[in-house]
Image (cartoon, rainbow, N blue to C red):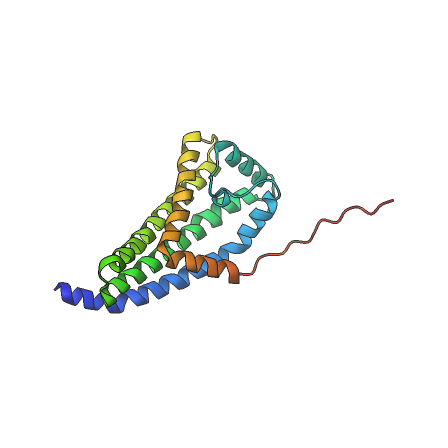
Length: 205
């Protein structure tokens, strides 16, 4: 019974991993123009909380980001803060996190079943797979908490502290997953960024 399940997973896991990779890539590329708009609006003195690494962020920084983005109109009905909450955090970031976690964990589980490594190699593959799962959990939870903070009337210092820790765990765990961080770097290098026209200084009179 277990042998049949392992044989089936050897065929299923590569397909699951590939589909998850495609879904994650689409979510990343779809999200990038929104991210570029947010990053541009926060320059030069602020950053999106997820980019405040390795030290993390505090409640005052989150308030400043919220205030800045709330003052940036996208159209008659929405601000950049609205865009940050949805579709950036809900649901593009969440889809990306789940997809990359599934891609990486499925890949390492397939390696474990296909090649049956032993000793240190087996331990490393298990660590890579576990880190992939931890990354998905941390990233999704972080996205949900940040969305709550940006839509709440009052920003809780305790919740910001938890969100900041989750951001740090997310980055450590995706790095430890190896496959996940490689995909992230490739996507960040290959995905085109939105360009912004420089602000011209007034001509001297």
